[in-house]
Image 1 (cartoon, rainbow, N blue to C red):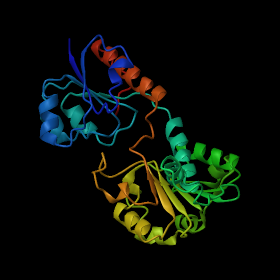
Image 2 (cartoon, rainbow, N blue to C red):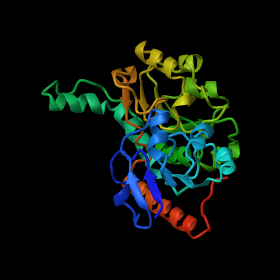
Image 3 (cartoon, one colour):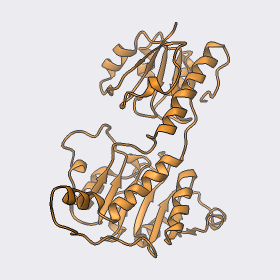
Image 4 (cartoon, rainbow, N blue to C red):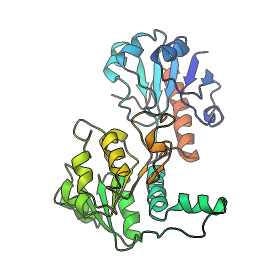
Length: 314
């Protein structure tokens, strides 16, 4: 039987969510931050299942895994895998299905948590602190600015409209036809959206065009009572500029689920700033999504062993 490594299984649930009986599967709960340790751990495995983009597989790593034959990523897109290098080395790369619903729900959890100050109020209640100490921000009648209006952004927009919010969106290729169909206003530009919005939520794919899209200048355009939420990719927002803006009270707060270094190092300022509501990249971490990931990963393995791989990434 071929050996299969399941990486970054933080909760230790992967092997219980699918039938791995056709391979000798091992789950690694810890994250390999050191490349040499990763290579040493995976050297004897023919199959590797990677969780999203948690562990990069550049050409340098693939060169050092001579036994690797099948690399599976959860989801159908993974910028952390060098697909050309894998192809050149005879490694088949496959993906799985993934739901866009969980990150939509987490986005709204962060928005509501920020605007109603749920963490400090709940903490005070548990600790015997003051009974009510903050004023929540109303969502009804406020402006929700969306950077990106794809599968996730459009569903965030739908919920925003249900709250009675005025929703405005912008991205480089967004058209009025798209926004009109969703009952959303098309912002004349990125700067206009940042200036107007009470809440700015990021829903863009990380690319050369979007990396660093929100920096010091862009953050300075936001109002001091506005919030920034990012459940997409950390590098879209300049992390140093964001931390500085939060420390200075330049914006009211931020809801963050993604970070340039994950896990976020202990003692990092984004762990401690009082106007940050941060979660450890939980956007896609739900039971139904994980069942899809691992059951379809097993289907990928079965198809590969039968000589007819499915869901190949090109």
